[in-house]
Picture 1 (cartoon, rainbow, N blue to C red):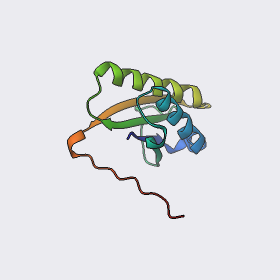
Picture 2: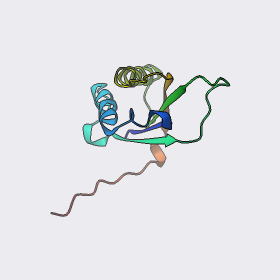
Picture 3: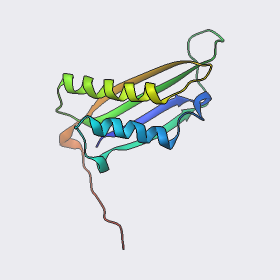
Length: 121
């Protein structure tokens, strides 16, 4: 835990990179809420999207962070703001009008299961 999923408009394909995911992971680590090896992130582009009704070049980055339930609203707000700030600083939209959002989603602690498998050496 946590699981970060970044959905984005495909006109940002050169902007959303593994390096950006590492920036996001570092921001999450710096909150002090998560262990380094537990932070998992991935990015999913969308080829078919519409933003508003104008022909103005626009893009979006929507980050959804799934975390185990039990943190206060203030803590979740701090995590969201830290992640948003890191994404804003790292993303260079070029000529696009860009919307960046972060959503924190609670995962029910009682129904979550996880296993750590050691590599075969």
